Length: 306
Image (spheres, rainbow, N blue to C red):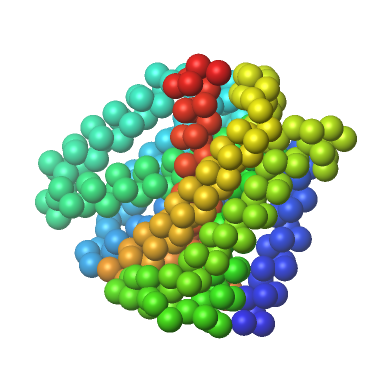
């Protein structure tokens, strides 16, 4: 526990300034690349527990994971001068081309490499999409605004902390004993409740706290049109729903990671963070929350035509 706590403090001291200050955004980009590479390696190492994965396949998988990451981020933001943006120039066609290219290359490798079959293609595509899109979602939230990245971090952190505290004290009914024996329904409910309280307070009172005027984090007309003009009670209800859904989805993300680890008989994805495990151990819930928030933003902007 002491090692876990110290690692958390060190991570916070390193990540918070890089996350908060725009001047350090290039470092945040570099971290994004490092996270993608490390997470892809963690996934491939996990899959190799059942069947060795050759160097060629590893290189191809990591390469296309990075390309999916870059193309997804570039599609989401064409104004900021992202690293290697000259490759993509914020084109949705580039994103589609990367996905198609990964399929063609992996299936070609399957033809010419005898020990590389359909299930191996599935391993590579899972890595490419889970890691590439997951880390891209986190980067896109930071590009949208610091408040969205904080929101995406606050919800799973609050959920995990209070789920653990209440689960240890009151947990009696196991939620998924075959996947994560220590998780209980009591802990999950408590974690979700406090995540809703803290996440809603941050999202609803964001403008009052940081801008000296009422505005929810979804009230920027440049990003969400007339969403901020809705009645305050309606905005509050929507924020509560989004926070509730994000907390639940974050817990699902954690359980997905737990099931993968149990399936491949590993304790952690990696060891880079002492007491926490690997990149995916630390950010599994955040990835799912980030993906969900991106989907929600898309729904608000385009499906509701706000």
